[in-house]
Image 1 (cartoon, helix red, strand yellow):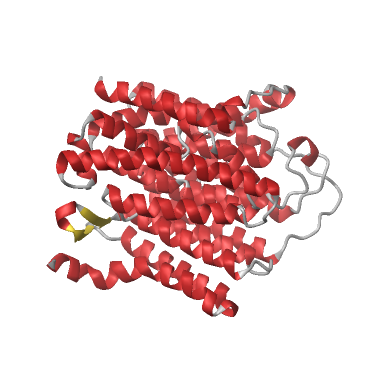
Image 2 (image 1 turned 180 degrees about the horizontal axis):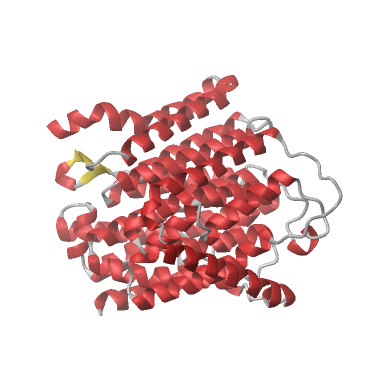
Length: 483
């Protein structure tokens, strides 16, 4: 109780602030944007404070049930990512005439994602993830078109089914430990571990159970896509990484799944001709790197979130979504420059945040694990080459909106600044290796991938197959946990 009272003045009000403001916005609709800005800036400040905090802080809400909050540098990196991406989305939408309802949902989803990043137990995590699912659905369906409604309902159905599996697993953990704390996963029955991992794999867009993601992220509105891929998807990854760090046996399973999803996502991405679908499939691949290397997952999420949000904002403002058409159309220089920096960061170019994240992610892995992720990195370089090597068109292009420019300045600045957090990744060998991977990816794109037109099947993404795939994943997970 004393620990709770000691930490309450800082942690609890900060968690509650987005929800008070989110619902209060409707009382003062003329202040919707400034109030949303206040919430976002508070996350930026709090994230930086926790990133620099040497020791983790713990707050017990219901100690008897293991309902606990834990804030450390890992949480701080993800909270900072949430603040940066949400701020970029607000800047982008500032002059677009979005309604108060839109900003309400942005603030609520922002607060719910922050809540996930400080959860250390399965029941409070369940509540936060469910709120995220509802708010994400409302943002996806904001345009009210038939297509948007279908994509949103599809997401809600898959999400709620996954969370049903997750809740059953959480209850089994409590039955075995009389506590909902993450630490109880180590002594939980195999079926509890399998159910919880399946639910979080689906929410995080990992491997086969995450194949709902490409359609959802690519068909949502541009700022919503940036928010989903930049931070919301990390809400499913965070607890998986946290559990992997607590329970080594679970970490081995998740590392294997992480490497599988890294190859699966990029395998589809390199043959994709639609820019937004390529970015969504790349997100599937990149979360695999986070699962494979839990110690640097927070830093990786920071660099990836900023880069992917920038690319989604740019892709939504290009004259076409098809790469074949983009080669024939003018693109504003500022969009081309932002696109190159963000894509090169994801590919791992030295001097950008993505290089340090990728280098540190493969540093302490087993040789065969590092080889798998290096292959995925080559595939990432091929996919990102599609953005970097778009031919220039001589016709002058119209200047982008001011909100988009401000958002890109913020995100590109974050990509460059994040590099200072991973200076220990810089060696001659790592720099040469990274440049070699990017060069190889560029050559493979120019001489091979760019000259072929291969269409991979999308049958597994259909709604009637997604639940069946989840069932197969549950069976495989149960077998992996038992053995």
